[in-house]
Length: 199
Image (tube, rainbow, N blue to C red; front, top):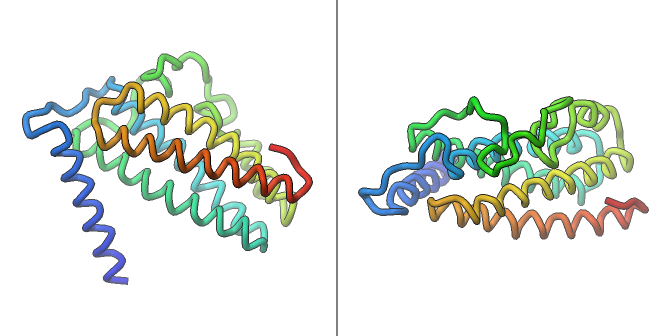
């Protein structure tokens, strides 16, 4: 356990150092209304819901394939969320904005946050509640459908950061998110097909 914790701390330190040095010692940190800050804030929220959905389905099915996917998504997105929040701390920026989500992409007026769906792709509170009542195949299918939509929304946001963010390490993380989440979308399409369902 101590070794694992030490490894996480070393990785976090390396990430912090990388962000600090990314643009050179004299480079000013991003501003509160920058794409860098907006992406970090919004993707942290987006990721938190993915982690929540993954833990819900883990307890609603015995299917090892779905449980393994849920575990991978939860671990990956929790770690990335930690990086995003850590960068906001490093930059001395607030973790919450007075502007609507997605404003940094010019989409602040597109989502009213109805029923908890704050950004494109996010599940509603009603959908999350339903997921928590299902078991077995029904839970698997709903999870795969919700996560497919969630990943599509996440990819759109990450592509926005690739285009608009200025901190190199954050752009690289966003690019990696696009590739990884598209791969998982393809995997989930196959998993849905195997269960006689569609995305």
